[in-house]
Image (cartoon, rainbow, N blue to C red; front, side, top):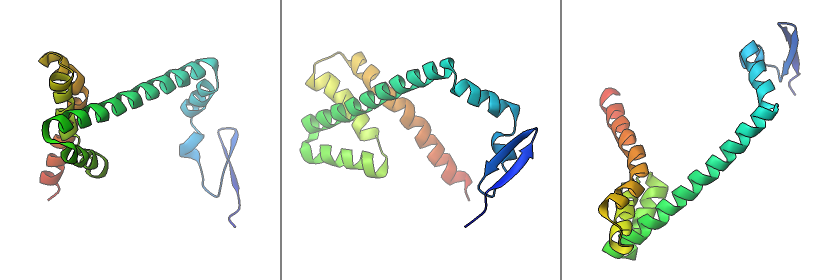
Length: 141
């Protein structure tokens, strides 16, 4: 069993399991961040982040549902399940984004621009991911 090492750094004793932790919490910035984390303002930020996390999760689940409904209406349930499998196993979201647009326009009857607005958050994440994947493969050689 490794011994616990204590190191004095700027007047503080920082104990980490056998690791000198000057880069972890010895700086004044890190101490200030931890003080803010435990303050009332930090609690408000954590609450806001929790609400934002829940909102993003609800939007993601809605996008999955709408994508499934749009592709099922257009191509059938087998293709819709395939699009869900692509999303979960290969992280390819483009078919579900197209399905989201189709669900909003064809199934629910909204105008084309409403379908684009609902599907756009997915496109904002897909395009940079595709560009970075292509550039990563081109410049890795």
